[in-house]
Length: 255
Length: 339
Image (cartoon, each protein chain N blue to C red):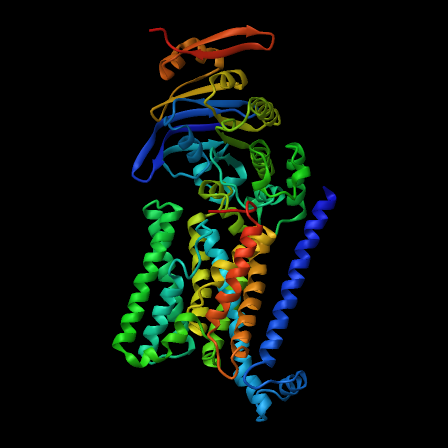
């Protein structure tokens, strides 16, 4: 289980996270929701060591993540950023760099790294594009290549920052199925996500942030029922029953 | 798919062979041609006779041609790789040692050394490295501290370039005896390469190239951006500094031998990126080969065109390189663009 306890963090000269408590269980999708600028990305980046911890604890099982060297931390936690470069690499090379945290001396990827990369590309359906430069892919394909990189990294904890933002609806749904598969394989999946419908539909646990603090964490049902969601976003959240379960959507508050 | 993969792999191998052959050819013709021509027979005879021999052929080969060809091979490789590394670290295709003032930093140090009477040896190499490193770190730290955009980084580099150039010019005004060599130095010139200059520079260049060849994975991971690279466990600050230090060592060593060759560090990495893609593990060795071959070929031409007079190599490089570069740019339009 991932446990974030009393976490303070942010950028040099600026505290963003104030006393954050959060848990994420293995085998579950934990959705992180909150308005723009509430600190979702900062929280993910602080958990995986991109930003420094100013105070508090982050533990995964019995391991104190904040005490690990960067390389070892990257063997436990993978992070997929919201906005990404399009580096001049082929798909295969990008996915292979998912094995970078395991790279030893001599500085060459081993056979098992290549195999892990091939498996990940197969999983994401980009094996046929292995030799294609990223710049020649569609947005959805590039996203899949990046996720294959995260899979190749083979970590217990997977942090995904707004992974559905630039995807069309069918790619979004495909992505959410993948997040479920990742969780089913025993990983901790922590997902920062704007789309309330998707978040409440797919998550096992939903966490709500406002102004750098975590205001509520519970099952989607609980979060919906609490009314805090409506308060935080200043909207009205409604749900309808569909054959596939509850479907949540947000509408404007009546004047 | 299989087919296109093997085809692209075969193309890349072909590019390696073609560049290796061209570089070898330019080195051999560089040894043969010049004010006094040597035949292949003379060449082998002089090579076998060794450095101690006093025959005219051996003297020409060992004391005029050899240091010059080695100097041009090494500085070409050094500047091209330095350019590729700087472009990678700053993730900016417009950067190069000459554009952002790295060469100018080394040039200032070399000019200052000349004014102080130091014309070769380790002190000169060290000074050139220090000048280049100071310039590259100033630009890189300035860019990070002020969160400069890619365009601003280039502008800061250009400003750095003029400032350092102005210092160099000031020295030549105050110490006129330095000005005599200054012209060749400004556009690049291999006629003054001697062993005391060559040996320390060669050692620095070979060592730096060796270290960089072990850092190509790091260079590629850096191209994922700051967050992406850190998420994969890369200590981005340390690796950036190390790579810039190596790039400065390369540029500094090249400048200490040859002066301010401007075009190689920008053009060669770009041309190869368009031909073979931007993956550092391929780009770096290809840059070393192509830079070495291109500069050596240009230097040979510069000795032959108006023989027995020399035409400055920097001018030859621009005449040959610029149209070729434009051709590749236009043909590769929309390929691996990177602003």
